[in-house]
Image (cartoon, rainbow, N blue to C red):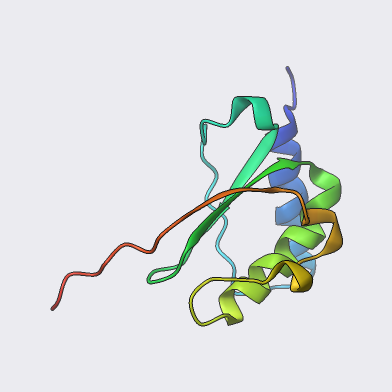
Length: 104
């Protein structure tokens, strides 16, 4: 496939971020092992839950970034379903607890 769906989503996310710079870092990965769930993305920050979202496409880029902003503003990395963009309401595939940080 010349331009797979995941690459299309990444390109759209990059375009949106260039147009409206936000403190969001995109890290493309080859695989999140959710092949039967379409394009997937993980949203993570140190000390917070990590969320895995699936069934994404380029048309959801703006909503994915809106979700990321809400996530970043949350204390523990939880965005209540009522606050998520409607298009992402059934896109949550799972969550991973925050890793405990080693004491300095």
